Amino acid sequence: MTDEDDAEYSAMDELISQLHEADPRSFAFRYPTNMKGEISLTDLTHVNVRHLSEVMDSIFLMLDGAHAKLGEMDQHDQNTEW
Image 1: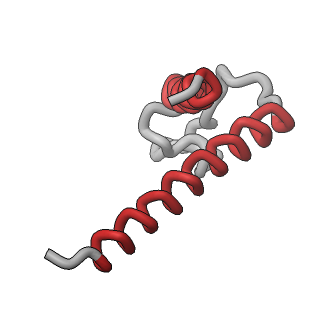
Image 2: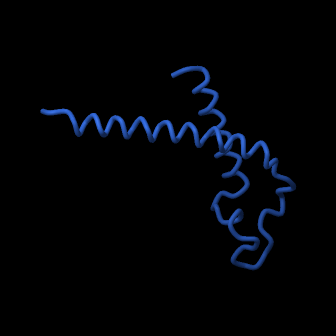
């Protein structure tokens, strides 16, 4: 693993932590009000959409690479004779 990978994992962890802190039950980002009819996310004043997009793109690339690697490993396992 490289320092760049460490930075990517740290960015992913930070994003997940921030999302969890703002919305621990993951309902508020999906619904404008809660089950009691109260407005969701009243403490959230802004979202830096550009930064969120950049971090999400980075996370996507990391997860896409992991998916490709797992697919290669699976293909290798299927082609290995025992």
